[in-house]
Length: 239
Image 1 (cartoon, rainbow, N blue to C red):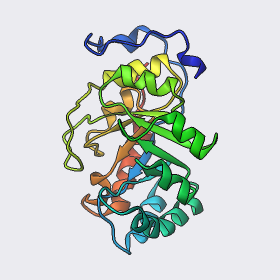
Image 2: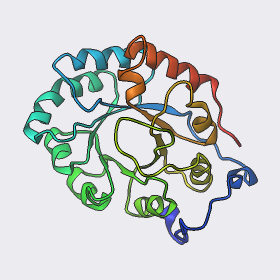
Image 3: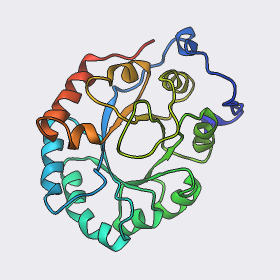
Image 4: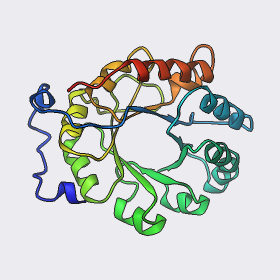
């Protein structure tokens, strides 16, 4: 991608200056948005829950993440979820599998490290597909993903989470570093709740990827999305 040409890939062993972004005038970026991730297991009634969540407040994207399930089974449960998303103009993303994203005609795919190359995904899914890449706490991986044609990079886990085992815990300053230098959107993920989201928004996150706080939140998914909507509206980026 053009904005990455000529950029030196940073050494992750060199600590990032927490105040890096404060030394620059921040360019305009759209307001931070909510990105839902499915719980690790869903039942036949989940489409109604997704609809309730989506109708409670603005949701930009939904990622179907069902680890350990056969792709044929995932394809069966995906259809009503895709319909919910399409009816509400929510981007429908498939986790990990380029082949499944193509089979479903999904809006895009999210790739973990080792799940495939963004170039491969682009060739399979076409120029309009949204391709995201997990970059953990690594500026190096994020710039490589950008160079490979990713549409967004994801950093995290920022907070403790029970959704998946994590080994990387970046400082929120990585969000400010990224958004100061690059236009490509960044996603913050990992243990994010309405109570702890504000620092990530202020640091520069373009999207908050959330799972447990919505599907297992007190009061249900609609109440959780409303709470996130309030935080997103009230919080402002630094810079």
